[in-house]
Length: 247
Ligand SMILES: [Zn+2]
Image (cartoon, rainbow, N blue to C red; front, side, top):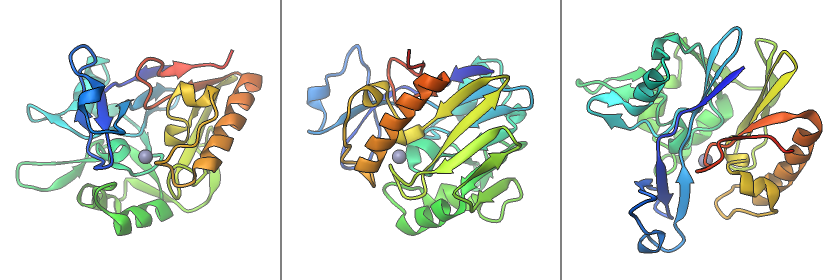
């Protein structure tokens, strides 16, 4: 399988939950609000024999009238229309901002017109009731009743026999993680349950998690299992190490 990280850049985020671009060469973290976290925002493409998979969809920012996500795909010689599946871990705005875009008339369209979107239904319902600032309900509501959307109701299962999903509910209620397995190779996408490599190596309860202790325990378990089973980990918020193994 081929893995392509699609970096949208580095940002700081604080209690306001607004993502502010951060230039690591010029900006000073101390000048941002106290408690600001420095994070990468980084969807992934995984190319398998059957699919062009997109794992989460980034912030959904537009650049000169075009989605940054589409530009980033094209820069990797991938036509956005060729994406076959969009796997969504959860619907926080830095992961699901790119599910749709707004045209000049103010109408929303799914960003990937030939893809199936895989979303936890209880997670969708939760997002729509919780709303701003964590969720952008206006961008998400297009998912409901859309024929391209597969609403998952089970806590665990398989997509097309080779993509394993499992709900953890750790970082946020109904958050799900994915294992993609082909030809003896196993890729693990833990999204915000396992956002950065440092959090795999050091025990750490994050204040921003829904169930921080559970997330910490899962990271410990996965890091160990991944070592034994040779997983390739994808780290959505890691500035330096988007892809790693535990060796
Ligand atoms: Zn999140």
